[in-house]
Structures are given as C-alpha cells and as structure tokens.
Image 1: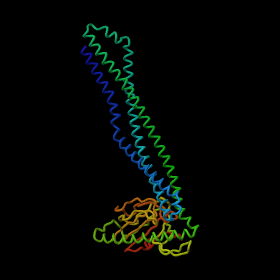
Image 2 (image 1 turned 90 degrees about the horizontal axis):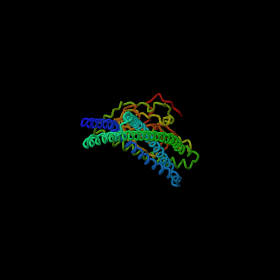
Image 3 (image 1 turned 120 degrees about the horizontal axis):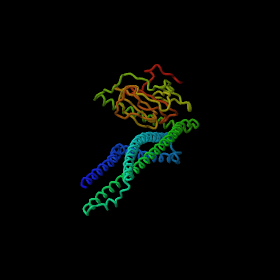
Image 4 (image 1 turned 120 degrees about the vertical axis):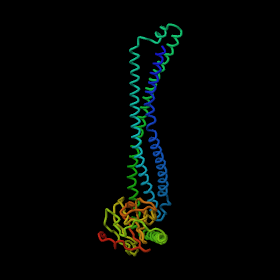
Length: 404
C-alpha cells in the first residue's frame, strides 16, 4: 500500500510539473519585451494627445478674429506651426505603428505558446479520461468497501483523495490553458485592430498635411491680389529679415572670435558642393531684384533653388551646426560654420534634421525642402557668408540652370 501511495504521489508531482512548466514559460518568457513595447506605446499615445491639444489651440487661433487681424507674417507663422504639428503627429503615428507591429509579434508568440500549452493540457486530460473509462467498472466505493480493516480503509481514502486531487488539477489546468489561449487571442486581435486604426489615422493626417501646406503657401501668393496688404507684408518681411540678418552677422562675428581662441577643426573641405541632388534650377539670383508687384528694388541675400517639397537639402561643405531654428522670414533654417570665417545658410525648410553643435560632413542631408516663413512655394534659399559679409553663391558653381 505504501508503494502505491508513493507511486501516486510521484505521478501527482510529475503531472504538476508537466502542468506548471508550460504555463510558466508562457507567462515569463515574453514579459520583458511586452512591458517595454506597451510602455513605449503608452508614451507615444500621451505624446499624441499633447500634439492633438496643440493642434486644437492653433486651430482655435486660426478660426478667431485675432487671426483675421493678425499681420501676414504672424498668420504664416501660425500656419507653419500647424504644419509642423501635423508632421510631428505623422511621425508619432509612424512610431506607434512600428510599436504595434512589434507588439503583434510578441502577442503572436504568446498566443502560439498558449495554444501549445492548451494542446498539452488537453492531451493530459484525454489520457486521464481514457484511463477512467478503461477502469470504469471499479468505483471509488468498491475500492473503499474492499478494505480489509480500518487502517486499510484510511489508506484507501488517502489514495482516492490524491487521485481526485490530481484529477481536479488536470481539469483546472486544462480550463486555465483554454482561458489563457482565448485571452491571448483577444489581445492579439485587439492590437491588430489598433494597428488598423493607427494606419487609417496616419493616412488622414497625411491628407490633412497636404491641405495645410497648400493653405500656408497660398497665403503669401494671395497677397498679390491686394497691393496694400502686399506692401504692408513686404515691409514686415524686410524688417524681420533685416533684424535677423543683423543677429546672424553679430553671431558669426562672435563665433569667429571664439573660434580663433580655440580649435577650428570642423571637417570642411574648403569648397562648396551644390546643396540639392534633385534640382539645378536657380529661380532667383543673388543681389538687387525688382519686386514684380510694386516695382521697387530689394536686396536678395542669397539664391533660390527650385525644388520639390520634401526633397533633401545637403550640406554644401563639412562643418558644425551653429543655428537650427525658426524665424518668421526664413521659416525653418540651418546655418553651418565651415572654418576660416565661412558660413552657409539654408532656409524655408519643411524639416530640420540636425541639431546645434552637431558636426556634419559635406553632402550630408541636413533637412528637407519646404515653404516655411515668407515663401510662395517650395525652394531652397541658400546663402554663403565669408569674412562677415554675404557673397554671391553662384560664383562657386558653373553647372546651374538660370530660371530668369
């Protein structure tokens, strides 16, 4: 009898291990990756909520009388900000989609592991049912009534209790495995549905971005229909540009003074390459140019290179990023220092891809073509400054195509 009890105990322990090991594998294996992905997803969703609120604030200003009374440059700044927020929302959604895809991989692995555990528990359950069917003619009561004495009866009671407990564990483990598999399946389907929603929202935002960009560009173009508004806007633009130009010159002088006291190694080659791979068209040259609306002459401190919205802008030479910001006249712009009191500036970007203090090599993408700031269409405004003065960039090139 003791041998039988020992045998049953061993069998119960083996069954318990068989039951527990797959469950532990399902629970423990993917937890770390899952926790990281879901934490990242939560942070992205919080960021998305903040961007949406900022969008609502901008839209409220655009819809208000304050917008109607605002100067043209102020209106353009708000529209540029709206475009930038939408672009950030799209980037956020791209990150969310990538995180959802990672989560789906994790959930599929969890679901597969749960299915395998469910199948394993089902096989154990089937074996137990078959064993009970094969021995169905021997009831628990018959086992008890066949006891020889009271001690034997107690031993048989313990034995039957262990068998029943083992049976209950098998049944419970099978039900738990079924429930886990069903839960993992629902989680997987839920993440897949959220991925579909994120992709749909991304497409909607992309369409919205196109409309916002067109609206921002048309704001300046529409000025030509009203000479008084156009004149006021140009006065604003010139004042803003002169103020910015003065700040830039002061900054370059201070930077050059600092450079002379320190290390001037910035990775420059000493020559300039064309800042666009996609276009050689110069739509407006450096120097004095006549305004086509009010026929006054204005100074153009650089050249304009016609290019498609969103195409790459390249660093004309290696150097260090000394400015990467937004202004009402230049929009998003970047200025690079190339050593020996040489600087280049790239304006009206849709996106800036570099940070202040960063070193860039010649030909590196520093941003994308846009029409931010005072601009009537996508292009690269490109300036070169040497020894504290702006100079004509075209003197360094001979393979451009003039478009005037």
